[in-house]
Length: 287
Image (spheres, rainbow, N blue to C red):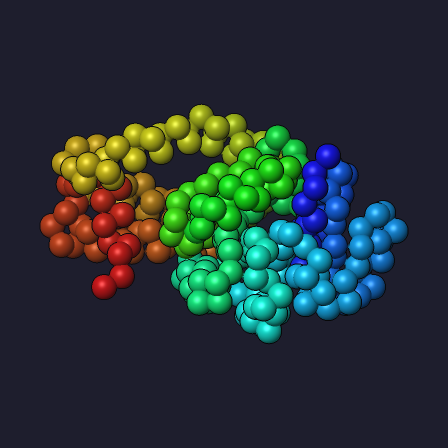
């Protein structure tokens, strides 16, 4: 039977799912939410409610922070630094890498044990085999809370840099939204001839399932930075140009595709049309 008390700050959809999972697996849970009424169902199910963040911090051995954004994290944690001493603070709020590093630096200044986390799951997935959470920062904090963290899903420790979990989270979400944008574009194109989005979704899922392993081939090229072979920039420019033309012919905007074509045009115009098209990766660095 777990003997650590877990305080959860924030009972939005994710905080509520995390609380329910911990409670269902035998953990003593304390909940706090800005709107106190949201604590009531959890109290009825066996959690304890804290009237303030300070009270929640004082009652918990591990404090999970599941708030809206970085500003709300600092708004609620800064005033209770004293109460958080001796606790393990795990921030599961979605923040940028530098925001995660800033909170970790604040925690270090106050002598707090702090770990940053990123949730690669939707609330319904918490506690299931497909739930994955990323953590970075203080290894001691990770080890101390690991049993609790693994209750929520696979608990991957990324390294001492507190921004690493957020960075990987943001990178993977970037690929997700680009993928979903492609589906939305495809659905808009096919809808012009009466094909339901559900049918296009099935087609896209099958196609992407077959083609996604090519990312490992692209990765080898990008890591080697040898762009002398492979599908050329100029070939890919023509292919993407055709996709844009086809979309416009159907009366559908090609806004999702045009930034890629612009990058390829730039490579071609500067004499790199014969290079592998994945060399567009080199253009993405700012400065």
